[in-house]
Image (cartoon, rainbow, N blue to C red):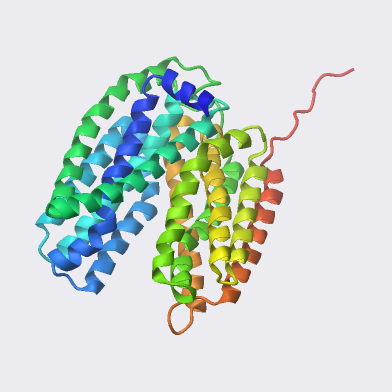
Length: 408
């Protein structure tokens, strides 16, 4: 952990970028947890319209990351990050001015699109600052820690603002903060420009605007398979698990599980990924993490409090291992001038996995909307299958030994 912090501190611009990710997560969560309440109580919109608006934000952010990554590759990482922040700042102000269903849904969609632009660009910028060093996975873990810290702190401060002032204050503060952050991130432009023009082919391959190595389509397909499996598993924390917990325990216990997840992710992110750095095979890390998630689903099946807590703890371990590993694989495998698009593909694959999982949960739900105990055993089996497929298909993408052409 100390080595990772030293690397981040010694790399010009890295702390600013990581601080920017923390600020974005914090600012977003001043508003997003209370967005539905604001739209229903202050804007007097129907639950159906609010659900549509929230869905538009989610799918624009997840489903349009491919377009956001393409924009990052065309505008440059800094330009895309600033554009994404300004789009989000504008969307918060539009939400305050929105007076009908169409304008609210459009503003929420714009909010999600701003995130779809920012996320691939911020990951691409981090790789450009650091190159493809061995510690990159640990720094991506540090980035996730910053995001999760902002996600945990944002709702707390947001609730205080709701008690002390009008709900609109959070929208204005977040909008202004994103504009200021966009200006601050412009300081990264000369650093990334210098990186592109001076880095050698082993550190960054975008110096001349052409890749020093071709894009390995099989490797990219394997990474997207991992992202799909991760999305399929991760979405259970946001839909099936809360509904199931509310059915077999209580709605208040759902909050306990989310708190356990938040604390576990923040505490485990760096130490686990430092340990994972010693494992040279990403396939071992990712398939092992998917297997842990599969076991966590089986632990949830009885529906007891202890089983659900064990489920979330094991799930959190898998979550913190997979996400940075996938990002570091993209950094190491994809030429720099295509990296933003590749990060966008990853986001889209995660969204696709989540969509398939939610569709399966909806089909297998009972009359009250909750999945059965057997559903978690089924998920466990699917998770084991994903882990096996990811591990076995990794051999297809492994580099082949180069045959000697010299004669004895």
